[in-house]
Length: 191
Image (cartoon, rainbow, N blue to C red; front, side):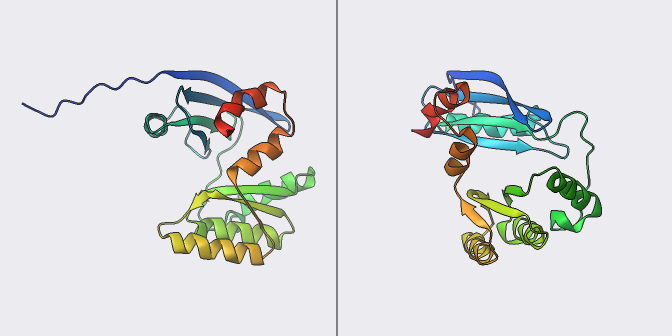
């Protein structure tokens, strides 16, 4: 006798989505189980995608835990992959040039989420502030191994002039209005 895994069943509505982002359109997959209490956004770049077996596995586990998932590719097939060797994204010349190009096109606001709030997120945000960008950190979409590290990073970033918001705040700001297809698709997850 072994430990045979019990098959799990879950009714999920899955659909391909596109998100206009300036001159490009980002592609993603939205999957919402019938009993979803919220949605978790996976934004993928630099070598990872919504098709990655690991990312799909994590998203599936989150759906079994009662969350919808939006797996979104931040890079288009035409986007060059830039290496990141510095803790701060602004520490690498190629990334700094890319960020400067966005700023020159009128995009002065940068929204940040990620892991190790007290290292990469912190140093990137401080570098962007030094470059005069408006920096918005999604507080419930950053983490550190130790909760205290994330908390102290948040305090330091607010003192440096960064905005600290929630994911729901970002979603409603980006939606801008009710009555759209995007609003209707996300509304069940926002209640």
